[in-house]
Length: 335
Ligand code: TRP
Ligand code: SF4
Image 1: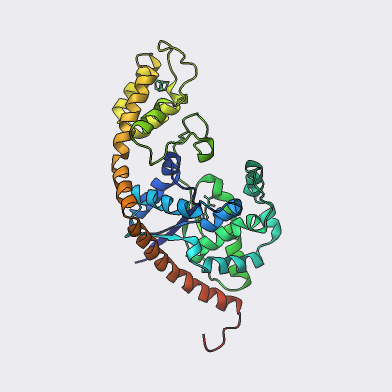
Image 2: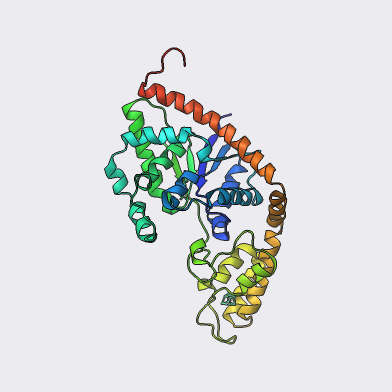
């Protein structure tokens, strides 16, 4: 069996929201369930240190919360290898070696480097670790000889750097690494409740954990077409975030109906949002059931992580033998 290896990771930001689900997780689950792919997904907890090294108190808790959400949306530990970056020390070794061969200029001109510094102006990001963020990411990816890396468009510069670093290693020493491809997916444009990008830091997120009254309340508070001040004003579904959610969660014939009724002012926004709350609640019910199960069975989640990490480590150990041989460090006859 010659399956294509898929690898992706997420920083442990804690509980995930619908933006994460439609932007990444659904795609991960989809790849896992397709024939011919072998998927590795991991928690990039060392990457979290690059921006949060001053307060690390939540990294552990966030890690487990995130894995529980992964499992609840359908990542299946029998099909995918789920692991924690910091539990596989080989990542640190490969990072070290790759940083030896990565020209500083490649990192300094990385567009996300400056962007993140502007975006997170409240943190001190002038560390070697932060500049080296993409080198660690390159190590994560090529360690498993990944063929495809499903990521959002914001991560493209990092995948491009990974490709350059892998090529440079192969050129300097030995053809150890296949050159990975980014796998971009069409992502539906779902915004937060206030119409900005859904983000934990904006307090506008609908979380996978939200249910019942909280979920309903959040949906009822969503911004709609600002031109619809009164119920008699015709609406513009094409610019309405509530409508975008309907296109994902509601039956197609009902979506068409809502579209018409919005344009002709036959339906009010409150009614429209109530209907959305119903469909999202129904759609999320099985996810919430699995969440409850895993929240009750904490040691099971730990077992899953432990097992996945052991499986991933076998690959990492093998790759590092090749790497050490390629760079010709002394190994002697006893190792
Ligand atoms: N940088 C990625 C992000 O912020 C997380 C990440 C770390 C990653 N290592 C990776 C993604 C390897 C894909 C492959 O989302
Ligand atoms: Fe948006 Fe629905 Fe209101 Fe139309 S009726 S503007 S789709 S919330």
